[in-house]
Image 1 (tube, rainbow, N blue to C red):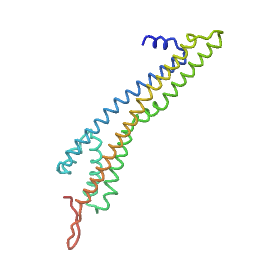
Image 2 (spheres, rainbow, N blue to C red; image 1 turned 90 degrees about the horizontal axis):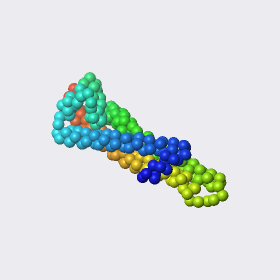
Image 3 (cartoon, helix red, strand yellow; image 1 turned 90 degrees about the vertical axis):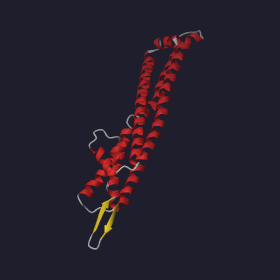
Image 4 (cartoon, helix red, strand yellow; image 1 turned 60 degrees about the vertical axis):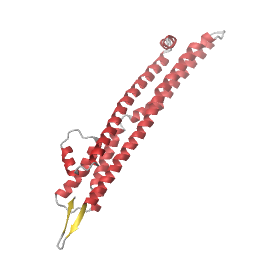
Length: 233
């Protein structure tokens, strides 16, 4: 470790700059990884809690009223809220609403909410992707520069020894290693978070479809001799 630190401290300015950049990118990626991991864990937990409560037989209108004035709604609660709110507005105004019209109202509102949540969940993922793709090239720049310094040292002397070229090659390899150290965790985390987000969005979409189907089944017109009315069971 002391040997590596000595090489880093005695490396050329450009290689030192490359090392500092790569260490900074690595720290940045790990901060994003820990924050995003916690965020997705909370989202999954809140989604599970909502699903258990929602499908436990609770009255949906009552549940809607419970979260209506809630300042901080979870993502899945927000999706339910906008879908039910859209339905309530149309139904409350006694406008004509049919099961066929619900996909154009409640479902569409929920799809917009899902798209918004998807954008929120994707925050910082592009940063991880950029770090994963750029870090090896930054490390390669330090590698090339270190090897160039080694060849330059060879051209300035008639004697060729390992001791003469070792420092330049060593700092070049350190730059390469730092590039990989920054890139690999960022790439792994990016792929994992992408899969997790896809699963979460799929759950949101399934819920919106299920709620739409439920609204269509419960909002059935009751025909009489003179007119037809509809009610929510």
